[in-house]
Length: 238
Image 1 (cartoon, rainbow, N blue to C red):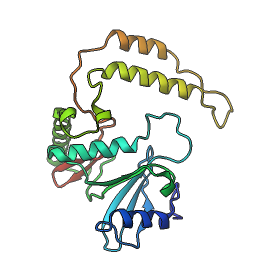
Image 2: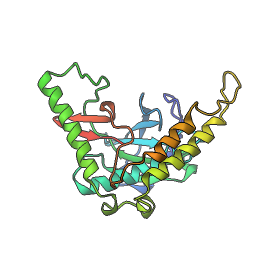
Image 3: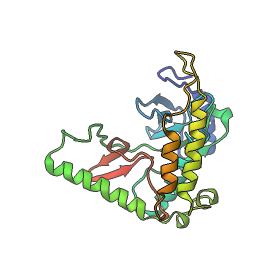
Image 4: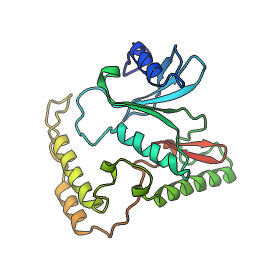
């Protein structure tokens, strides 16, 4: 097990798996350390014997409250499909593993990209000119992402069925997540969390104010610290 990690991984098992699956990409020995960020899905940097760097993204350990959350397989397939278009800069992905006997949960591997990550949206470290260019690049990247037709970029069939029913499906998903979370017990107080106040009112409002739909791709958490700045290019991280 690695020691400098909040979510330990059996490095020997991982090394055997990666070097057998992708011997041209991974060469033992490997080193592994967990990033300080990536709270939703724990993320790690891998460095192989040739000093090549990669990122491992995995589901968190334990029982997941929602089946729709922490879908690293969804991240993998989306990045792979988007990369094939050449219109939106994303890391290269190498493999998806859903064999839980390897590290205990689903994970995928992508290329490690060196660059700057800005955690303060004001980006005080940049000049006004560079700051404007950085945000303009972020907006252009998002617009290019929205311009993609999800039915034409090679996504699995399960991703592209029912593309015209986004809002109704989101309402169903919200209800399921809400119901599951309402049953969770607070570890400190021992009390059941219960429903979110006025949640039913919110859902009813969404149902009665559903706008016309246009099928496209959106980023679920598009913000400056989920992007990597490389020179004057913004790289999307999913």
